[in-house]
Amino acid sequence: MTIRLLPPDVASQIAAGEVVERPSSVVKELVENAIDAGARDVRIEIQQGGKTFVRVSDDGCGIPAAEVELAFARHATSKLATAADLERILTLGFRGEALASIAAVSRVTLITRTADEPVGTLIRLEGGRVTEQQPSGRPPGTSVTVEDLFFNVPARRKFLRSDLTERRHVDAWTVRYALAYPHLRLTLLSEGKETFRSPGNGVLRDVLVAVYGPQAGASLLEVLPEGGQERPIQVSGFVSPPALHRADRSEITLFVNGRWVQDGRLTYAVVEAYHTLLPTGRYPLAVLRIDLPPEEVDVNVHPAKVEVRFRDADAVFRAVQRAVRRTVLNEAPVPTMGLSSDGRAAWVSRPTPPPAWTAPPATPSPSTWLQTPLQAPTPGGLPPLRVVGQVSAAYIVAEGPDGLYLIDQHAAHERVLYEQMMNRQGESFPLQRLLEPVVVEVPPQAAARVEESLDLLRSLGFEVEPFGGNTFLLRSVPALLAASRPSEMLIEVAGALEETHARATQEVEQAIIRAVCKRAAVKAGQVLTREEMEGLVRALEGTASPRTCPHGRPTMIRLSVEQLAREFGRR
Ligand code: ADP
Ligand code: MG
Image 1 (tube, rainbow, N blue to C red):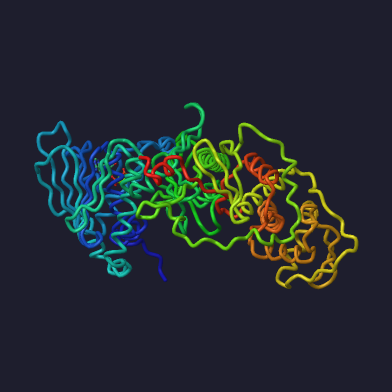
Image 2: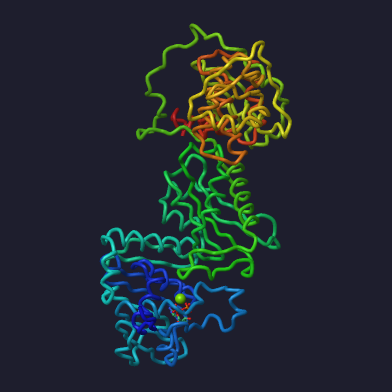
């Protein structure tokens, strides 16, 4: 085929496609322009999910009459002048492409006025061509109306989804900007009805309440920036306490210098910070602002500007992970017992479990934790607890300064063992040599994983040698597990290895340790002496994350003094 230059119409439609994918992209670009124009009040109106009608009105600086037509030219921008400016971008826009792109694929009407011009300007474009321009009145600011998106690009129009789906995309962008700019009063109207409004008082917590509702909004933990202003990477915002989680990562919202970004690695940093604090397969909520000097980040990576590149990506990763982890560990409250709707404690109406004190199973004495010295103050921020007794041979009842604590003895012991094993710092864990090595057959799918992990297993106390096919010779087990059946233990560890898809040594190690702790921890049904309970509670106080077991389930629940008073009608 002959090589030809594309006709300008086609070229501009192709270019437009990179910026404008769907109605929500129009909303995003117009709101960014409003923010760049210094607006405090932004109103978004849509019809049919934005497919037929989008209007964004702002009270920003407006466009001088002489420049209105130029604003629609491709690569026309007031936000940067030289290539050097690209190194330090402080505005959301800078490519000068949005208005040109939107106008190329829709019918646009823009009305604008600057504060020092007596009248404003109206301009209309259709498929990128100016059809009308005239003076027009309006208060200072700009409103852009975009009708019939993709009217001239049927291929694109076909890919638009239902009104509801398109509306959800618009909602998502609206919420992002409300969260990133708490000073902005952002209103969204769909089919003439107000569906969202942010308070615009500058208080992020109030925006969170508007977005997530009063309960979740109030329970989010504030991430305070670390150190003084001199730190180059500042992380601030809110994250969920471990008790609040979601089925996917979609509620992890990240802004870099006020720009919403999609960044798998940073999202992973947030999730990682909750390690062992959330049940598997559950994800936190987070709204985080990462602020760093503009020259440290390249925002000119993607036409829609939702991806960025950091000069030092590792440093940003660490800063995010550290800030979130610190917040979650310091601030996470122990979950309090929920009250049923009639105001009575939910557990009051549960059927009483059968008494378990009749025949305690013969399990080894959980004396290992007694070696842990008493620590004060506790690293994980638990108050000092006084053991009162045991319920159901499964829960330790304890008293703290702020109420009653019920501690799940198995989960608590798992946590203690897990941290002891994780903190062994390069030393091998004490092992118990078996009198006779045993031949263990592991599931064939797991054999390769075991074989890959021989060194790691040895450092944890399992001396294992390949013995042909999927059998292995087991010579020792961690001392902790001396009382368990060694072959079953290795099979369980092999199962855990197979289940974790992780390859990184650290994660594989954690998976093995979790399996060991689960097996070694004192079970429910075991009656504990007072010394054992006290030893366990002291050891738990000594852990860094006392509130959850290594699998993310709670180790304890609390009934606060206030709740008790309420339940007894004392106030
Ligand atoms: P960019 O935002 O990358 O500069 P756009 O195509 O989005 O490119 O906008 C082009 C120019 O039009 C902007 O640089 C700005 O000067 C002007 N402009 C667009 N929208 C507004 C607005 N809402 N208020 C004031 N000026 C605006
Ligand atoms: Mg723009």
